[in-house]
Structures are given as structure tokens and as C-alpha cells.
Image (cartoon, rainbow, N blue to C red; front, top):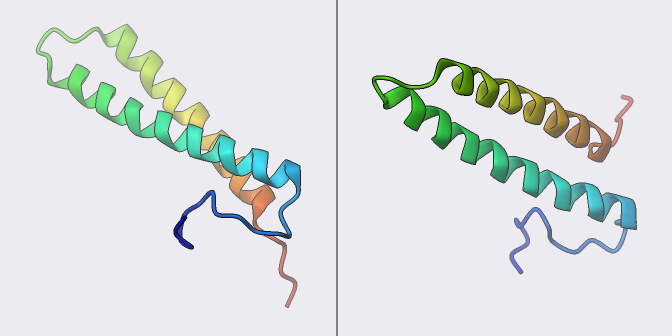
Length: 79
């Protein structure tokens, strides 16, 4: 396993942190998949506007969830 791998082993990780990291990977993958789906739908001349709006809304929800998890995994540093 590469040390730069997001799911790399860290002995200080709690089960909760490992679960959050795994969920973060899943959310990022889904976010990228939605990017592709949105792009493909926009390329269609008769693309479904309602479906496009739903995909974009889902992508925003994922972005918020990703940010929430990243905030939980980043330690607060008080200088």
C-alpha cells in the first residue's frame, strides 16, 4: 500500500476514522461519476433538464458530505 494512499494504515486511526476515510473515498468516487454523467447529459442536444438538475443537486449534497468528513478528519490546530 502506498504511503500517499488515502486509505493507508495509521496506528493512531480509530475505527471511526477508518470508517470516515472509507466513506470519503466512496463519496469522492460518486462525485467523479456524477461529473461524467452530468457532462454526458449536457452533451446531448435533447438532454433531460430535470434529470440534469437532480444530478447537480446530488453532486452538491456529496460535496457537502465530503467537506463535513474532511473537517472531522483534519485536526484543529490552534497556533
